[in-house]
Length: 353
Ligand code: NAD
Ligand code: ZN
Image (tube, rainbow, N blue to C red):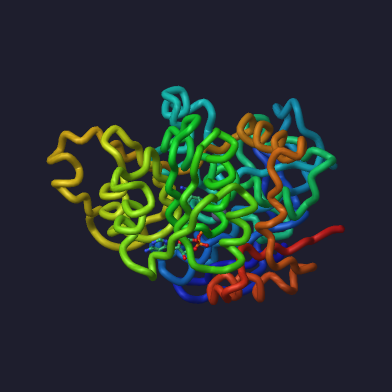
């Protein structure tokens, strides 16, 4: 079969590989549409996972099941499915402890285009099919379905990690597709005000649609000065970090009320330490919590978030700014994500109608 692979750091292309084999609990799937992720760019061009040779890229898609193992109960060839980017081993001790995304080791629930071939291929392998796949609701089109692999669950997890409650003033730092889904999730959770940090006009327009009430740009001065000016010097209740780098925590701690919580879903690709300002962290006693996490994957999560989209409570269509048709546009879509033109939110490649 053909797959689009990372040949080595900084080099990619189409390769031939044997089609994956199905174990008793597994499924083999064929993508119906795939989306490119910022993480594919970190992996391929920044070497964020280290060197990988001939590893097929991609972890965002929806798919059709083509084969299932003898012990798979709830899926059969021909089913159209939602596929989470994170596919835990549900019988692991980490999953039993409530941290399925770390099954088998820290971050090891992330398998596609990390520990095994990803979804930019004619066929791909899904471990624990009953635990990880979900039926694709008929009301969700294949492009929107791709947003359920990673963008929705990650953006929503940022809001869970920040523990957003009714009436909170929430700051969302970074309004790429992940941060946009954090804005939407904060609104669904009943935030009173959502301050979004971002610069790109189409992301600002989408953030408004999703419920952001105020905007600041990190290019107009420090985030904390602008947040404190908007909140009478008090700061915000909760913060979701979905962009920036190790220094963003400095701005976040300075923007947060005592007792506030930070939910980080941003991938910190460089730097040795996260910077936390001592004084504004209450000299260690400010009750300012920092939580950071990889998105939860798995079937239940996909079913619940899929239900939200199918019910019309969450419109993910604003995210897919560039939609292509056919595998021959995959590389163009990937390069577009790397080059990030100002009007880009998310490139998606449809492989069926
Ligand atoms: P993106 O690059 O499209 O968006 C990031 C946004 O942050 C951009 O709009 C950018 O303008 C903004 N930004 C950059 N520097 C900033 C700064 N100093 N202060 C404030 N904002 C700044 O990326 P995305 O696809 O939305 O993903 C966001 C992050 O989430 C990425 O790091 C991605 O790798 C990560 N991610 C994490 C998980 C997870 O499970 N935790 C899953 C998927 C993606
Ligand atoms: Zn992704």
